[in-house]
Image (cartoon, rainbow over all chains, first blue to last red):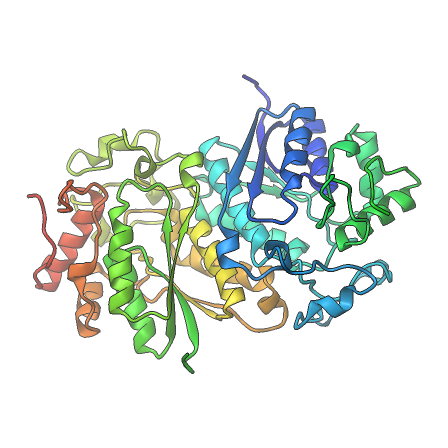
Length: 253
Length: 253
């Protein structure tokens, strides 16, 4: 179908993964998009992922239903739980540890809009699970490149968004697989990992990403509007504001 | 319920994971068994996993249904494909690479009974995916120990059964999770990794493992009897033979 080199792109429906995928495309890769229904409250993001995949003209979009809900352990998976909101965010974190003890939080993350510590919306081992499936699919396609939109600057403080996590998974990938054993290196690309949210917005605009198709909110209204207050909305709004670009999606308030 | 320290044990229903779980129990851990329906042809192993879990008096047995079948790439997932059988095994391997080029195959693996290279029954990234779920569950319980029954001597040549794979996953686990960030080390135990199959049999008998409850065959008959000829049966029979112990399960021939 195409002579371009294939790459798997993890597509959540959010703005970061859309920009990461657009970057992969701009580098000449043929895109194989991978999304997950994992019992998330904001399953609306899957519809966004479909729209983004279509707009990026991916070769294939695989949507896997995975049983994270049976494991639990996150506010994102529990319909009754309150997702972290600012300004009351900190109080929602319960026993969550202060991530800053283990690795310094960048100064620009201590914005009062962004909650401190590992939030209640952290989903245990989520990125490890997502990447494990990406790795399986990479072996089958076969693809030697996996793109993900994680970001370690303007982020929610999830441990599995850090550069050292990405590096450790790449190392694992090359030991875990037939491709790795055969000496065909599998590369993980996290092109946004050191960017500020505003830089991600600018990069997306440069690449023609249709941000109107993306969905970021953890707790959208029934009509689809973003709450504007959860961690994810706060980070997104801050990014657009600092980039000096209007955010094309609708907010409740 | 118990004051013993919790450990997750990956339980496939086969003999190795039963022995690994029995070892964990003998070391005083409270067992949380984890099994997967992943579209395997030999789904009968899930029934075996249930029986083994019961006989080991686990605290909980979580059976997750995961969509490996949608990704494909293995004879174990394809009802129509022929699983590797000896002596014609080598011919089934198609484009599979010779694993021995990348790491030396132990002399005792070159037995004519065991097929060379990475077999058609290899399931892409399977152990990475299994361990990723184990890690998620470990965060929720919380448990700091994960046991798995992988074996790098009398094994089928899967890359994700090697000590370097286990070490890389442990490193990842401690970067990927809240527990790791908080400095609570997560330990992967692969107590059988350097044992011969016969030693695993003896260890199991010493620990009172009921091998009659386990299931190893990739291609069982409708009545549940093991084929006796697939890689997994060949390895098992060799182990019992060398241990000088009768295998209590029934074989077709």
